[in-house]
Image (cartoon, rainbow, N blue to C red; front, side):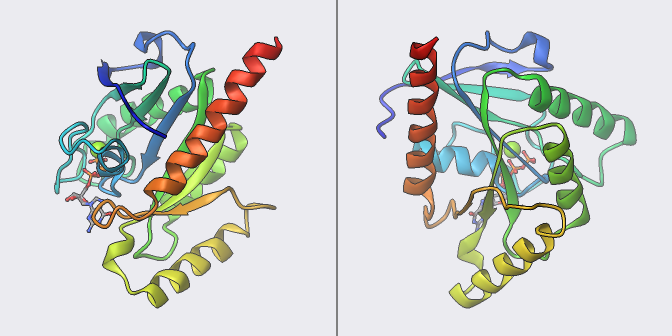
Length: 205
Ligand code: GTP
Ligand code: MG
Protein backbone atom coordinates (compact mmCIF):
# COMPACT_ATOMS: atom_id res chain seq x y z
CA UNK A 1 0.00 0.00 0.00
CA UNK A 2 1.41 3.37 -0.97
CA UNK A 3 0.06 6.54 0.56
CA UNK A 4 0.50 9.15 -2.11
CA UNK A 5 -1.72 11.74 -0.53
CA UNK A 6 -2.29 12.30 3.18
CA UNK A 7 -4.55 15.14 4.19
CA UNK A 8 -5.68 16.28 7.63
CA UNK A 9 -9.44 16.81 7.27
CA UNK A 10 -10.08 18.33 10.66
CA UNK A 11 -10.94 17.67 14.30
CA UNK A 12 -14.58 17.12 15.18
CA UNK A 13 -16.31 17.23 18.58
CA UNK A 14 -19.05 14.69 17.80
CA UNK A 15 -20.44 12.21 15.31
CA UNK A 16 -22.81 14.75 13.78
CA UNK A 17 -20.03 17.08 12.69
CA UNK A 18 -17.78 14.40 11.11
CA UNK A 19 -17.15 14.31 7.32
CA UNK A 20 -19.79 12.54 5.20
CA UNK A 21 -19.68 8.79 5.80
CA UNK A 22 -18.97 7.69 2.25
CA UNK A 23 -15.41 6.34 2.51
CA UNK A 24 -14.15 3.37 4.51
CA UNK A 25 -12.75 4.44 7.83
CA UNK A 26 -10.20 2.93 10.22
CA UNK A 27 -10.24 4.25 13.77
CA UNK A 28 -7.68 3.90 16.56
CA UNK A 29 -8.93 3.65 20.10
CA UNK A 30 -7.57 2.55 23.45
CA UNK A 31 -6.48 3.75 26.85
CA UNK A 32 -4.96 7.18 27.09
CA UNK A 33 -1.24 7.06 26.28
CA UNK A 34 -1.35 3.56 24.75
CA UNK A 35 0.13 4.91 21.51
CA UNK A 36 -2.78 5.63 19.13
CA UNK A 37 -1.41 8.84 17.66
CA UNK A 38 2.12 7.40 17.43
CA UNK A 39 0.78 4.41 15.51
CA UNK A 40 -0.99 6.65 12.99
CA UNK A 41 2.25 8.58 12.47
CA UNK A 42 4.16 5.33 12.04
CA UNK A 43 1.65 3.96 9.52
CA UNK A 44 1.62 7.16 7.48
CA UNK A 45 5.36 7.80 7.80
CA UNK A 46 4.59 11.31 9.06
CA UNK A 47 6.12 12.10 12.40
CA UNK A 48 4.03 15.11 13.37
CA UNK A 49 0.75 14.21 11.67
CA UNK A 50 -1.16 13.14 14.78
CA UNK A 51 -0.28 14.93 18.02
CA UNK A 52 1.72 12.74 20.41
CA UNK A 53 2.48 13.45 24.05
CA UNK A 54 4.05 11.83 27.10
CA UNK A 55 1.14 13.30 29.06
CA UNK A 56 -2.06 11.23 28.71
CA UNK A 57 -5.15 12.95 27.34
CA UNK A 58 -3.44 14.66 24.40
CA UNK A 59 -5.98 13.77 21.73
CA UNK A 60 -9.32 15.37 22.61
CA UNK A 61 -11.38 15.28 19.42
CA UNK A 62 -12.16 12.93 16.53
CA UNK A 63 -9.25 13.65 14.14
CA UNK A 64 -9.69 12.67 10.50
CA UNK A 65 -6.88 11.99 8.02
CA UNK A 66 -7.83 11.27 4.42
CA UNK A 67 -5.56 8.88 2.55
CA UNK A 68 -5.25 8.89 -1.25
CA UNK A 69 -8.62 10.66 -1.37
CA UNK A 70 -10.21 7.26 -0.75
CA UNK A 71 -10.29 6.33 2.92
CA UNK A 72 -9.84 7.73 6.41
CA UNK A 73 -7.67 7.10 9.42
CA UNK A 74 -9.31 8.43 12.57
CA UNK A 75 -7.37 9.28 15.72
CA UNK A 76 -9.66 9.10 18.74
CA UNK A 77 -9.23 10.39 22.28
CA UNK A 78 -8.17 7.79 24.82
CA UNK A 79 -10.37 6.43 27.56
CA UNK A 80 -9.63 5.96 31.23
CA UNK A 81 -7.37 8.91 31.95
CA UNK A 82 -7.70 9.04 35.72
CA UNK A 83 -6.60 12.65 36.15
CA UNK A 84 -9.42 14.05 34.09
CA UNK A 85 -12.57 15.37 35.70
CA UNK A 86 -15.50 12.97 35.86
CA UNK A 87 -17.51 15.22 33.53
CA UNK A 88 -14.76 15.30 30.94
CA UNK A 89 -14.34 11.54 31.03
CA UNK A 90 -18.09 11.11 30.59
CA UNK A 91 -18.11 13.52 27.62
CA UNK A 92 -15.24 11.62 25.98
CA UNK A 93 -16.91 8.32 26.60
CA UNK A 94 -20.15 9.49 24.97
CA UNK A 95 -18.28 10.99 22.02
CA UNK A 96 -16.24 7.83 21.42
CA UNK A 97 -19.06 5.37 21.94
CA UNK A 98 -21.59 7.14 19.77
CA UNK A 99 -18.99 7.45 17.03
CA UNK A 100 -18.04 3.75 17.22
CA UNK A 101 -21.57 2.42 17.51
CA UNK A 102 -23.22 4.66 14.92
CA UNK A 103 -20.66 5.49 12.27
CA UNK A 104 -21.86 3.66 9.15
CA UNK A 105 -18.57 3.83 7.28
CA UNK A 106 -16.45 2.52 10.16
CA UNK A 107 -14.66 -0.48 8.62
CA UNK A 108 -12.40 -1.42 11.54
CA UNK A 109 -11.80 -0.01 15.00
CA UNK A 110 -8.29 -0.97 16.03
CA UNK A 111 -8.38 -1.34 19.81
CA UNK A 112 -4.87 -0.74 21.15
CA UNK A 113 -3.67 -2.61 24.21
CA UNK A 114 -0.33 -1.97 25.92
CA UNK A 115 1.62 -5.22 25.58
CA UNK A 116 3.58 -4.54 28.77
CA UNK A 117 0.75 -5.17 31.20
CA UNK A 118 -1.83 -7.84 32.07
CA UNK A 119 -5.30 -7.17 30.67
CA UNK A 120 -6.68 -4.10 32.44
CA UNK A 121 -10.28 -4.04 33.64
CA UNK A 122 -11.06 -0.96 31.59
CA UNK A 123 -9.79 -2.58 28.34
CA UNK A 124 -11.71 -5.74 29.04
CA UNK A 125 -14.91 -3.81 29.68
CA UNK A 126 -14.38 -1.61 26.66
CA UNK A 127 -13.95 -4.66 24.42
CA UNK A 128 -17.06 -6.22 25.95
CA UNK A 129 -18.97 -3.07 25.09
CA UNK A 130 -17.61 -3.19 21.50
CA UNK A 131 -18.92 -6.75 21.22
CA UNK A 132 -22.35 -5.76 22.46
CA UNK A 133 -22.50 -2.70 20.20
CA UNK A 134 -21.25 -4.81 17.26
CA UNK A 135 -18.29 -2.57 16.58
CA UNK A 136 -15.94 -4.30 14.10
CA UNK A 137 -12.75 -4.56 16.18
CA UNK A 138 -9.20 -5.75 15.71
CA UNK A 139 -6.61 -5.62 18.47
CA UNK A 140 -3.16 -4.03 18.30
CA UNK A 141 -0.67 -4.84 21.04
CA UNK A 142 1.51 -1.72 21.29
CA UNK A 143 4.99 -0.78 22.53
CA UNK A 144 6.46 -4.17 21.60
CA UNK A 145 9.95 -2.63 21.59
CA UNK A 146 9.81 -2.26 25.35
CA UNK A 147 9.80 -6.03 25.97
CA UNK A 148 11.96 -9.01 25.13
CA UNK A 149 10.53 -11.36 22.53
CA UNK A 150 9.83 -13.96 25.21
CA UNK A 151 8.13 -11.53 27.57
CA UNK A 152 6.08 -10.12 24.71
CA UNK A 153 4.77 -13.53 23.66
CA UNK A 154 3.98 -14.49 27.22
CA UNK A 155 2.12 -11.22 27.93
CA UNK A 156 0.10 -11.45 24.73
CA UNK A 157 -0.88 -15.06 25.44
CA UNK A 158 -1.99 -14.08 28.94
CA UNK A 159 -4.12 -11.21 27.60
CA UNK A 160 -5.66 -13.49 24.98
CA UNK A 161 -6.44 -16.13 27.58
CA UNK A 162 -8.16 -13.50 29.71
CA UNK A 163 -10.16 -12.26 26.71
CA UNK A 164 -11.30 -15.78 25.91
CA UNK A 165 -13.42 -15.62 29.05
CA UNK A 166 -15.61 -13.14 27.16
CA UNK A 167 -15.03 -13.97 23.51
CA UNK A 168 -15.86 -17.19 21.71
CA UNK A 169 -13.35 -16.33 19.02
CA UNK A 170 -10.75 -13.64 19.44
CA UNK A 171 -10.67 -10.64 17.09
CA UNK A 172 -7.77 -10.43 14.61
CA UNK A 173 -4.69 -9.02 16.26
CA UNK A 174 -1.39 -7.31 15.46
CA UNK A 175 1.79 -6.55 17.35
CA UNK A 176 3.22 -3.08 16.86
CA UNK A 177 5.97 -0.71 17.80
CA UNK A 178 6.05 2.88 16.68
CA UNK A 179 9.76 2.87 17.54
CA UNK A 180 10.91 -0.16 15.55
CA UNK A 181 7.98 0.10 13.09
CA UNK A 182 7.05 -3.50 13.78
CA UNK A 183 3.57 -4.33 12.50
CA UNK A 184 3.42 -1.62 9.85
CA UNK A 185 3.28 -3.87 6.79
CA UNK A 186 0.78 -6.27 8.36
CA UNK A 187 -1.62 -3.54 9.46
CA UNK A 188 -1.45 -1.73 6.10
CA UNK A 189 -2.02 -4.97 4.20
CA UNK A 190 -5.03 -5.71 6.39
CA UNK A 191 -6.44 -2.22 5.75
CA UNK A 192 -5.88 -2.69 2.02
CA UNK A 193 -7.77 -5.99 2.05
CA UNK A 194 -10.70 -4.49 3.92
CA UNK A 195 -10.84 -1.55 1.49
CA UNK A 196 -10.88 -3.99 -1.45
CA UNK A 197 -13.81 -5.89 0.07
CA UNK A 198 -15.59 -2.60 0.79
CA UNK A 199 -15.24 -1.31 -2.77
CA UNK A 200 -16.27 -4.66 -4.27
CA UNK A 201 -19.39 -4.69 -2.13
CA UNK A 202 -20.25 -1.17 -3.31
CA UNK A 203 -19.91 -2.29 -6.94
CA UNK A 204 -22.24 -5.21 -6.23
CA UNK A 205 -25.05 -2.89 -5.13
P1 GTP B 1 -3.79 10.11 24.07
O1 GTP B 1 -4.02 10.87 22.80
O2 GTP B 1 -3.34 10.96 25.19
O3 GTP B 1 -4.93 9.22 24.43
O4 GTP B 1 -2.51 9.11 23.85
P2 GTP B 1 -2.15 8.18 22.60
O5 GTP B 1 -2.74 6.83 22.78
O6 GTP B 1 -2.42 8.87 21.32
O7 GTP B 1 -0.56 7.98 22.81
P3 GTP B 1 0.62 8.76 22.06
O8 GTP B 1 0.78 8.27 20.67
O9 GTP B 1 0.49 10.21 22.30
O10 GTP B 1 1.88 8.16 22.87
C1 GTP B 1 2.00 8.27 24.27
C2 GTP B 1 3.46 8.09 24.69
O11 GTP B 1 3.89 6.75 24.41
C3 GTP B 1 4.44 8.99 23.93
O12 GTP B 1 5.46 9.37 24.82
C4 GTP B 1 4.98 8.08 22.83
O13 GTP B 1 6.26 8.45 22.39
C5 GTP B 1 5.02 6.73 23.54
N1 GTP B 1 4.85 5.61 22.59
C6 GTP B 1 3.82 5.41 21.75
N2 GTP B 1 3.98 4.28 21.03
C7 GTP B 1 5.16 3.76 21.42
C8 GTP B 1 5.89 2.57 21.04
O14 GTP B 1 5.50 1.77 20.18
N3 GTP B 1 7.08 2.36 21.68
C9 GTP B 1 7.56 3.20 22.65
N4 GTP B 1 8.72 2.89 23.23
N5 GTP B 1 6.90 4.32 23.02
C10 GTP B 1 5.73 4.60 22.42
MG1 MG C 1 -3.45 10.57 20.93
